[in-house]
Length: 133
Image (cartoon, rainbow, N blue to C red; front, side, top):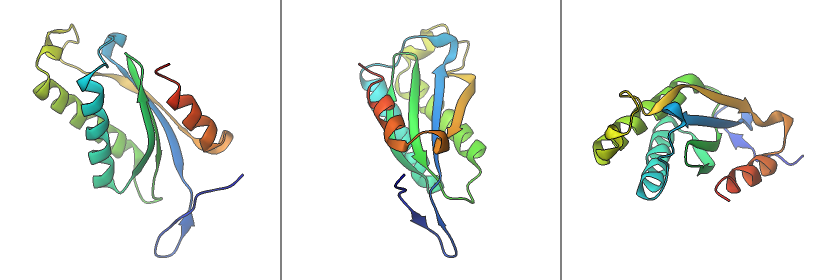
């Protein structure tokens, strides 16, 4: 398998994760401008952590993201930040979303996260690209 290598001061690494988060109660609200804004928010949060989003795509009730990270990043803090920032900004910028019965929460409290060591990044990228099909 061909790895895309990243470099630090004293390291060379290839660390990628597949992340999936669902909307609270699996409400089907990810469409139109909300999707575009959500993806932009995710990219901004990732940049602030020094993380690169390789691919992201939504279905109406969840999002898949493939991202690469540095070894020193605490992934749980990144994921929690991405969830909290995106929820806050989506509620602020799309007030009608609050009217959907989400009980004040945008995301389900749980999420899926896997390293991509068991499959190739191209397989995951292909899977994510075809989520909206």
